[in-house]
Length: 542
Image 1: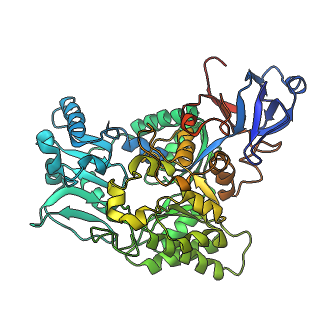
Image 2: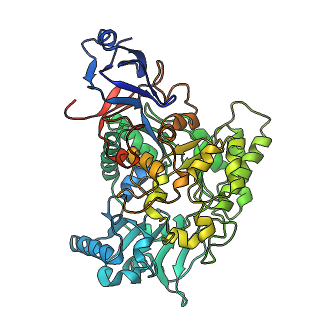
Image 3: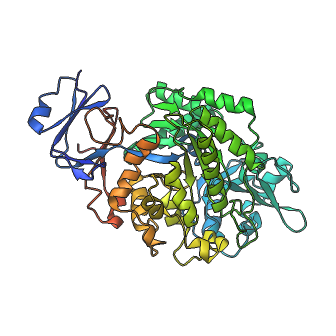
């Protein structure tokens, strides 16, 4: 086998052991690591077509895989004005005013990343934005991607003049007189106004997705678990790969919405295993609830507004049946479950599916996404059921506060806000914890995700840690984005480690992520990213 890549003068860090290997060089061919040794013996393996890189002491580790991301739908969603940095209403209004000034006559304004904390004590409603959107059709995605604010002109064009009933847990929020406030909760409601807004062309979505994926590779990502196969998402990935514009290895889970009948489930099963060289459909994404910030999570007791009392599926029993069908077919599932009642129901469904499968082997590896607040007895069930805890620590870091003055905490109340994002408790209870960003909900750089898991503070370090007892150790954080992401994908024998025969998916850093301070980790330079032995990002000086 020819050698495609040789890395010399390296510190090789295996996330399985957390130790630096005794070797200083690595060779790859045919997409796999073929040799670990010293510089002289590995350099001798290089041929005329080999890429040889002298790393001058940089640290090589297994490639970082984001455990939960939305690269295609997120690329489209982030084509509007970025509101994620707006901390209060004056900042939001100023950003919108600048965007309105740049609009073509009659054009729609799209925005994203709007944090409900920016509204302070004002209602999350279009009226709170003042006159800046008067006469302008505008749709502003809130940061959680489960809700949006529609301007009065957008509501008018969509024919929305009051509440409506939906088959899934969605709502057009109205005031006491039945007039829409502009706040739309969950997909079915959001789609009412999105249906009349202009959409970017497929070429524009492809171009934007390629741009995002290049940035992800430059941040050190070699792969991601993409909860993202709606509409033309799979066609977009196929086109990008055909054009040589797919620098990440993506594991894609298409959605199963409430109301899915037997035919819909069979179609999802039939999609499994389809894909290309660097992307593959592997799993199904489901939703058990919405979000705490919106009052659409499913809690065992209502939140402090009397909300978050219902499942996303009108008939939770049907969700349980679908999990059983997918389990019997060997299809792993990833279920969005944020509230304690939602998480409990997902675990109950998996337990019932396992009890009825006749001890099939190997059983599909199911997972729960987000798990923002759960009691002790729920924490203990993950390991017993073999269910992976897919966590996004930067959600806690960026959108909640240690003093519980944020919207998330105020809605939950002191008791439940005190058990926020229990990454360490789940780990210590034996659960496999996988880390991800949920981009575009939070930034995608994996070093920032790991840093957040370690220090539990916002990226600007401006606030004290929220739940420091839930922080992961440096090795746990590294394993959460390498070893554990490979395990939940059933790829532990071929990915997530530095070992001969494993995939040559590699991330190269200027510093050792296990020894650098938690607060400095996010700023460590990424020098080289490699997928299947092929560099997808390379620092200019290498």
